[in-house]
Amino acid sequence: MEIGPGIRRIGKGLVNSYLVETAGEVTIVDAGAPSYWGDLPRELAAMGRSLDEVRAVVLTHGHTDHIGFAERIRRERRTPIFVHELDAALARGEVPNPAKGFGPVRIAPLLSFLAFSVTHGLLRIAPIREVSTFGDGATLDVPGSPRVILVPGHTPGSAVLHFPRHDALFAGDAIATHSVTTGVDGPRIPPFTADPEQALASLSRLDGLEAGSLLPGHGQPWTRGVAEALAAVRAAATGVTG
Ligand SMILES: [Zn+2]
Ligand SMILES: [Zn+2]
Image 1 (cartoon, rainbow, N blue to C red):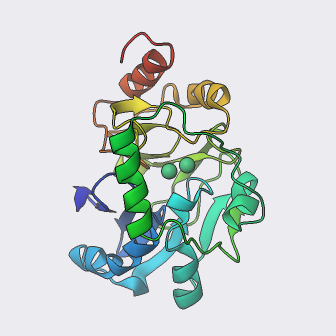
Image 2 (cartoon, helix red, strand yellow):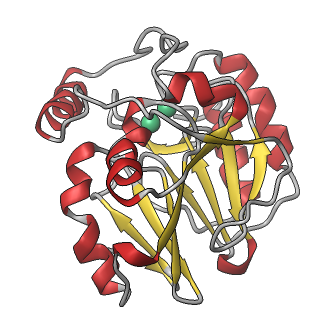
């Protein structure tokens, strides 16, 4: 579905993969679930593009629900997969997931997320055999020229990607607008975060940044500004609201 000019999303908002188009070329931000591979040609066609114009997959971090079809597109199309250097081993399946525990849970949303995981192939993720890595502050030489902001905590190599020309900030799991384990909407530190305190502290790196849309790994787009999103995350974390 269309998210904004030059941006489409695969998935209904539970697990997100984004297509970002500029000058006829496409960068995929996060590869969602393996089953999204089947949706990709149609989403590309809706932009007037095809797999031939996908230049890169950039991962916000190395969790399986963001790796999705990455190994498949790498293997079949030789599309390079980019991830922060601190999450490269995780993306290659060489180290265990640093995040433990669900945190608070409500049974119905958790069960529907588990059902989604089963039906969309999330329990059978192919690790990525080869990744290209980037560091903090890099501007990536891929369509849209995203700038990398390292925000460790959810995972050590979690990165937010700022696409200035699209006025969009891809937050990965640094900020979610929907919790898959509680069903609660609104900007939050998501579940499955390795070090929630560090994740919260890292958000100070986004202070002062402006973007018309904040696009999370889980949940719907946030269009009320980065500052308001950060305030909501901090309020939720300190129990001031919700
Ligand atoms: Zn994650
Ligand atoms: Zn995730």
